[in-house]
Image 1 (cartoon, rainbow, N blue to C red):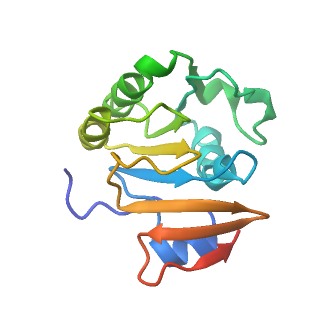
Image 2: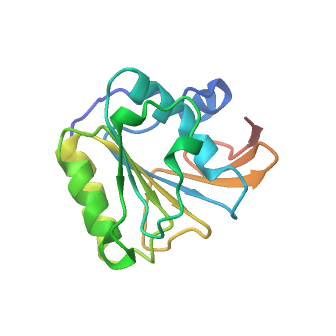
Length: 169
């Protein structure tokens, strides 16, 4: 793992002030119920990356994501992988380790189990940031930053800030 690598801005000033940005390399866990804004937490980073001609990949094992519904995303710089649940962790690890995709989003995978460690190593190999978005926190995923979306623009920092505040985005 690269030491002393600067974190990547979340492009959400209040969140940046609490967690100092996304780890790169690293894995971030974001969990919350459907409709509570999980994707909205990573959307500003996705927008910035794609608008700056950097690739973003989304692993969507359920096939629910509608890419044109993502505002201000350069769809030419967005890769969608729909591989089913059994291959979701493996696909995300391959993308994160490639070195060509600095930001990977894994949407609603089944429990990661052995894939959890593989994902962390993959981000280190590819110098990437991987977001795992789930309804419930995955007990197999040990991440430096864990966020819970509460809806109505509210976000609880469960790990990664000294005093775990609730912030409004």
